[in-house]
Length: 587
Image (tube, rainbow, N blue to C red; front, top):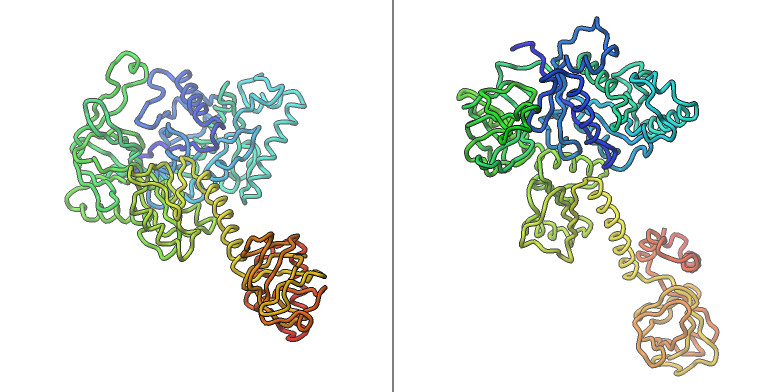
C-alpha cells in the first residue's frame, strides 16, 4: 500500500435556485484565471483543482509554513441531490466533504433541510456557503480579502449581514447543529463553518477553498490514502450514448488505479455485470476543447480520485449509482460478493407492511428510504427503475388492509407505457425528493380524514330530536309523527331513547313526499317509528336522543374533531343519561 494521498472529493448540495451551479462555475473560473496552464483539469463529471492552483487563489490566506500532502480538490461538477446521492459507496458517500449552499437572504428551505438529512445519513462532513451576499442592499466589494471586505461595509450592511447569518445559525441549532462564521469557529470537528460568498463576483471563494483544503488536510489524511496496489473502486455517475462508441459509462473512481484491459464487476439489480475495460476516455484540456471536434482522449490508466468515461462490452443493463470494482482472477468471487452485498443493503424486496418506492439510482433510493423512515413512513419494497404494472398490483394488494399504504412513490423515474392510474393506488412522482414526501404527507392526511369521516358515517351519531306538537299522522303500527332535528344527524335504522332507555327504531324518514335515508340538523321531517304508541311511550313535545351503542360511543370519542361543538354537547348529554343507569358506561 502507498501512503500517497488522493484529491479530496467535494460534493455540492442545496435548495433549488440558491446558486449551486453558479458557485461551481465561479470556483472553476477563479481557479482557471489565477492558475497557470493546466491549473485545472476537467474530468468526466468532475473538475480537479491541484494544490498549487489553490495556493495561488488563496494567496496569503494559507500559511506558507503549512506543509500540504493533499494533492488538491476534486469537485463533482453536477450539483444537487441527484449527483450527490448517486455517488454513494458502501456505508456513505463518495464525497469526502460537501458544500451546502444556502441563499443568505432566504435561509433554510425544504431542500436545504432535506440536504442536511441526506448529509447526516451518509455521515458526510460539510461546510456552508452562505451565497448571494452581493444581493444584501448596500453591499459593495471593497477588498479582495473577505474579512476586510466585510469589516469595511457600511454599519447597516454589517448589521444586516450578521442578522441573516445568525438566522441561519439559529435554524441549524434547532436541527441540533452547532455552526458559526468560519473565522469564529473554535473547533472544526464540532462546529459547521459558514463562509459568506458571492457566486457572481467571487467574494469569499478563496476563503471557501482555504477552509476546504485545510479541513481535508487536517481531518481526512487517513481516508484519502490511495490504495495504489488495490482494486479500483468507483460509482457509475451516468450511463450515456456516446457518438461512435455506443453506450458508455461515466464513472467516478475514488480508490486505486484503473487500467485499459482491466476486468470489472458492476452491481446489478438481479446479478452483477462482468465485463472488460476496452477504453478509458478523459476530456481534452480546457484550452484545446474549443478547437477539436473530438472532446476525449484515450488514457492507458487513471488514478483516484477522478472521473473517467469507460467503454466496455455488454453494459446495456447498467444503472447509474451502481458500484464498480476491478478484479483479478483470485479475488473475483470476493469482489462479486462485496458488490452485491452493497446493492442488497439498499434494495428492499418484501417487507411485511409499507409503501412501494422506486428511484433511478441506488443512492437516491437509499436517500428516499432514509428520509421516509425518518418520518416513520414504512417501506415495503424499494427498487430501481420505472414504475411497472407489478408495482401497481403489489401496492393494490395493501388496499384492503390499509389504503394509506396502497401507494407507489417514484423519484426521478417514469411509468412503463402500460401503467395507468388506479382508483385504489396513489402514484406520486417527482425529481425532487422533498416534493414527493410533502405530496404523500398531504395526500395521506386528506385520505385519513376521508377514511375517518367514512368511519364516523358507519357509527350511530349523536342526535337530538323534538316531537313537534300537532304533528301526529298515525298513533301506532308504526307511529308516524313530525320531528324537528335539533342537533346532529339521524339515519333510518337508528334506535331512539328517552331518559336513557331505548324505546323505538326509526323505520323511515320522509320530507316533502321524498323518502330519505338520513337527515341533519335544521330539517323538519315525518318519521315512522316502530314499537311505540303516541300518548303512551311518547308524547308531543318529547325530546328524543339517538341510542348510541357503547362500542360506537368509544369509537366516536376518537373522532370528535369531525363533530360540531353542539354535537359534542349532545354526545355528553347522552353519556350522562347512560351513566345514570351504568356509571362506567363508555369508559
